[in-house]
Each structure stands twice: as structure tokens, then as C-alpha cells.
Image 1 (tube, each protein chain N blue to C red):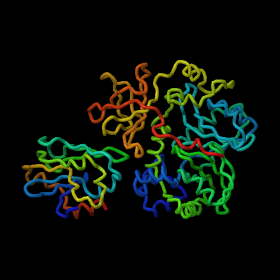
Image 2 (image 1 turned 180 degrees about the vertical axis):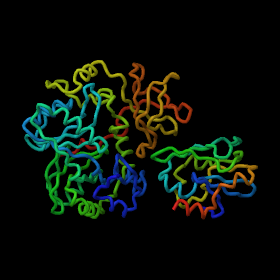
Image 3 (image 1 turned 60 degrees about the vertical axis):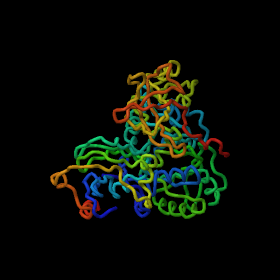
Image 4 (image 1 turned 90 degrees about the vertical axis):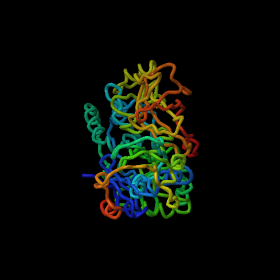
Length: 124
Length: 368
């Protein structure tokens, strides 16, 4: 996982990449979920507020809602993961982001996000 | 306090992810549920199911007593034979589902669900008035290891077992100089055995079986794969698919109930009526027609009307689609081949009613 990512306590991350933000779930979350078998992502163009559920990830055992770390509008979704959810468990697969968003979030929205290193400490 | 089996430390050392299940701290997976599932379907897996209950019924009235508490006919059991049973209440509801083994004249072994041992014992003691029987809970003295998969018999024979018991039989045996009981039973739909052993030998036996099983591709299997395996085989899970408000007829277990049993048993009049007319609900098998997963508690719809609820659901690693067990109103036009809907996150998704089991069981073709 990119060390510059900012994480939520509910195990999502956000990472700025060329003016957009990538959003996904942390490596720790993937490890905890185990075999991932279904991913449902929102439509491009839909808008979400911070902490709103925008996606569902199902492992063999259970369905989990995924929440927005910051507010924004969906610019791109990772179709490859929708078609092959098991890629999220694949250590060699790099593109683990779920969606890319455009966001006008201000510093207040970022205030409660954790640096990846702090997040790691928190979960371990 | 969460209980631990005698193999608890072994699971931790094997890197298992642990969960609380029915008051026990149990391994849910060691590597991956899907991989473990496939191991059992393709070669052989070993499960620690020591949380399950072992009750012994002895005494002169054992037979009439057991015949009073289950719909099955225990008088048909020959020595060392087992039968799948339901412990029913007066309304025919299922207090627990059990396997009863006839060990000897006036000695029976009952394997009960971990989550139900207390309820079972309560009910069994309440029903023993007037019968000369003793009920002993041996659960804390025994460990239970399940060895399941197409290579399980080959593994057992490689350890010097002369002859395995036939399907749903139990026999005394010896492995690595340990005396134990081996039964040809399981909860996976595959050929396999369950080994009942005194707690003090379980760690040694577990290690030895893993070591000897290596050349057969053996892996330890957690409760996660145990659940997906039993679902593919459409075997009921107590608490999900069976409860005190569900009769064996409603649960699709009519095949297990003899029509000619003369003894009275708890719930007999209701169960006998339902055998003729059907119950208030019926269990069905479903396959999802899209990639969504039906899960426990999701509602079932037909013509925009709620007709039932999913009790177990998930993926089928072998079929590659998503399957479920559900209870629906017994509507005549809902049969195998009908399309119904499951409400998943506020949207209806099509599912087709299919035959159970979802995969072919391979445990009945075994030779004695």
C-alpha cells in the first residue's frame, strides 16, 4: 500500500493522484476479509458525502459496506475489480483502488484521517 | 468465558484466524476458505469439531426412551449403526438435530450441536420421567476430528486400519496406538470419517494425521469452509435453517421420518398431519441468477409480495455461482424452475428454485 495514503478507522484509504483521489480499502481490511467474492461499485457521476456508504464488498463470510473517507463525485470505477473481485486478494495485483473521485473537500474533512503509519499502529 | 478445544494452541500455531462460535474460540480459516473448500472436494481435509456434544444414553429403557424423543425409529438400528435424527418438542419443532449411534444393547451415543447441548440435556431430562435411563454428558472428555474428502479412506487405510465402517456406521479402532472410535459420517457431502478420541490424545492424533496426510494433500480446514461445504451439500445448520418453530417436514427432512413408527413421540400428531398436508412453510434451494449473494435473513419475494426468508446463503466454490436455502410459503406454483426474487440492499434480484443438494453428494457410494 502507498505510504502516503490517508486512512479511516473503518479501514478505507484515500490517496491523491494527479488532481483526483483514489479510494479503496486498506491492506489490513483485505487481510481481515479473506476471500473477496463480490464488489459492487457506484455509477460514474454519482455524488457522495463524507462517511456515506458508496460500495459493497462481500467476502465468503459476509457483506461489508464501504464508506467515503471524503466527499466527492465518482470520476472512474475499477471495472476490473467488479469483474474479478478476487484480484483484491492477489498480492501481485497493484490496482487495488475501487473508485477515483473529484473532490472539493476542505481540511476539515481530512482532519480525522490517519497517516498510514499511524493507522498501521492502530490496527496492530 | 469462551471455551477452547484441546487443539486450540495447534490452530494458533498454524496461523488460523479465530472466531467465537457457539461459545467456543474456533478456527474460521487457516489459509483461504475457498482453497480449504476445494481441498476437501478434491483430496482431504481435517477439521477440529471438538466443540460438538457427546451424550451417552444407557439403561434398560434406552430404546423406548429414545423412540419417545425423536421421530426416527431407533428400534431399526442394529449395533454400531447411526441414524440422523431430530429432537422434537411437543409441537414438532426442532430442538436440535442429532446423530444417534447404537453402540450396544442399551447404550447409545448422541452427537449434538455445540450451541444446543444445554437445551438438549434440559429437554432430555424432562422427558425421562418413568424411563429407566441414564444420560451422561461426555462432551468435556472427548475431542472430535473430522477427516473428509475423496482421499480420506485412502489415508485411513494407509495408517493400518483394516476395514473402515460403512456409511453411517461406527466402530472401535486404533490409530498410532491410540484407542478411538471411527464413524463414517461428516458434514461435507464427501466420503469421510469422524474420529472420537479422549481429549488427552487429540493433539498427538492431530499432528500425526496432518503428517501422514501430507502425501494425500491434507490441509486443516476451518469453520468457514465447513459452512460452505455443508451449504453445497444442502445440509442444515441449526440456528440458521432449523429452530424450535420449524418442523422436520417444513425443513425438507420428511425422508428421515418413518411412516410406520408405532411408538408415540413428541410432536407426532403434528408431524404426521404435516407429512400428508405439508407444513406452514417449506425449505427450498435457490441459485442466484446474477452475481449478488443471498445471505441469512434476506427476504424472498414473488410477484412483489414477501413470501419468505433466506436462512443460509453464500457462494458455491465448486459451481461458481451463489446458492441459498430459504423458507417460503408453500405456494403451489413455486416449484423447482420457478423464478423468485431476493431483496438485497433495497433491490430485488432474480433467483431460481433448484433441487437440493446443490452439488452431488459422494458419500453414499462408498463400500463398507
